[in-house]
Length: 231
Image (cartoon, rainbow, N blue to C red; front, side, top):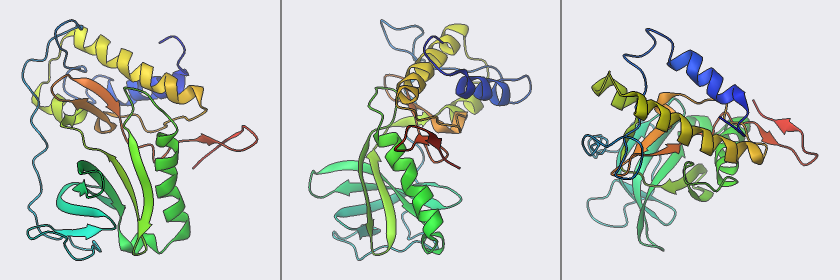
């Protein structure tokens, strides 16, 4: 795609679209007036039962029935897990809106290097303002636990969609690549290289089907002298 450094898209294509790597090609749901049409509204991710997850350190609940709290956020339920952190559905009590609250597990938060890497994701993504990149609302730390408050997106990951729809059409393939390229181009203009583009980090937002790039945890960001740095 014009204007995009080829490394991100090429690596994503080779690792995720080669024959046998995933069932079928790639899909991006569409809406009227855009290439392709959304066959059905993607369901919200199935929430993990609302019980405090093992290893998570939360503060006392603000409202009855909540899992707990973190700073000014009401923590409602777990919506995702990773190797080093947990993503909660939460409510910002100051702005009264739902957010996806990504927190680091306490056993990793004791490491300064791990905390810096975790927060680097937020700084890298927050620097990019584009329709196809997830919005970062706040980066902070509460009770020794770093967190990132992001926009809460309905829909599902491209990875989940491919498991359910193994034969997407060519228009869907072209649209997903175009919107991924647009988001990557915006980040590359700021010297930020994602370096972890894969279906699980590509979100299909409901009901529009718009692509959102997630998880800049391996991003390479520019230093003060303009050189790129990262893990």
